[in-house]
Amino acid sequence: MRIIESLEEMHAEAADIAARRAECGFVPTMGALHEGHLSLMERAVAENDVTVASVFVNPTQFMPGEDFDNYPRTWEEDLDAAEQAGVDIIFHPTAEQMYPPRAQTSVLVHTLTQGLCGMSRGQGHFRGVTTVVAKLFNLVRPTRAYFGQKDAQQALVIQRMVIDLNFNIEIIVCPIVREEDGLALSSRNRNIPPEYRDRALALREALVRGRNLIRDGQYDAFQLTNVMQEMVLQDPDIELDYLDIVSPETLEEVERVDDLVLIAGAMKIGGVRLIDNILVGPDGPWSD
Ligand code: AMP
Image (tube, rainbow, N blue to C red; front, side):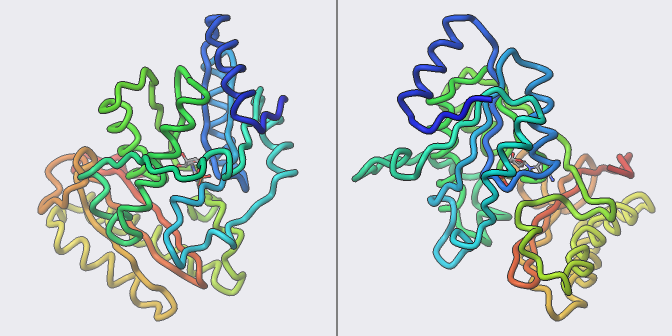
């Protein structure tokens, strides 16, 4: 596995891949790799001639007061894990290279970023994400790029950006990988104090409850969100950022579950912010 740390080298490698007419799969990450990341990498390896994964803790997607400094960084372990997954190239640039002095250009997907995490973290979070992903796309020039359904809003925002900015890149969204008890894998899980770990499941349990209620015929979004939010809020140590039922295409809140909906939530426990979601409609699916 090759490690590329300079933009010049990445540009040259991308040109070489293109000259060979090889198909390139790309998995952008912020490192602290876990099985969720590895599932994306393994799929990229299976579907492409060359797989590039980036490890870059992007400062511009962290809002003031968020956990940029405490974000887990496990570079040596990440190298081993990516190599095991079959990744060919790890791209690991510095923030100084990625953001030249006096940079003043950004990419913002306007409407899809207004609700959910855009409301609780601010649209600036997604501005940071789309800006860095657009830059990474220009550097890596992939055929396909792989994102996780865990960050459902992010995946949708990236899909919109790719269409709107005419990137010739196929976006592939991969299923959420979970711990045995159902907690969605996240780099931030490492930061959950052990005494809070069990209660970190509250959001997942509320989402599953919502899905079960839909299976039982409750389609009223207001009733459903009330039940789910109350479940999470029973624990005074949990701060619920949001728990909404939205259209999986527009992310606008729905009144009734007439079709497939995205039930998405974010909460903080023990100083760690966690997100999760479920896609479900009147005909299921009833498990994930
Ligand atoms: P991150 O390093 O958190 O920026 O995540 C990099 C990519 O991995 C994103 O596309 C995430 O959606 C994806 N990802 C993170 N956690 C999971 C998970 N539990 N299952 C599937 N994909 C995930």
